[in-house]
Image (cartoon, rainbow, N blue to C red; front, side):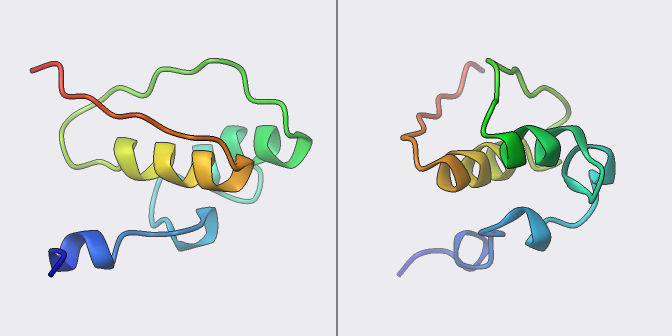
Length: 72
């Protein structure tokens, strides 16, 4: 069975808590997704702030494959 954290992970921008400057109503990423124009982006920050979740939601919204890797 998949861990609870994975099962409860947000599936859309509306389900993401926090990061309003990125995914809120006037957020940068939300505006790009509405226009379907998303340039290459790099998400960085401390562990656990939602970088992978935001990337997964972006790929789902744009219906493109996503790839993750751990550089640590």
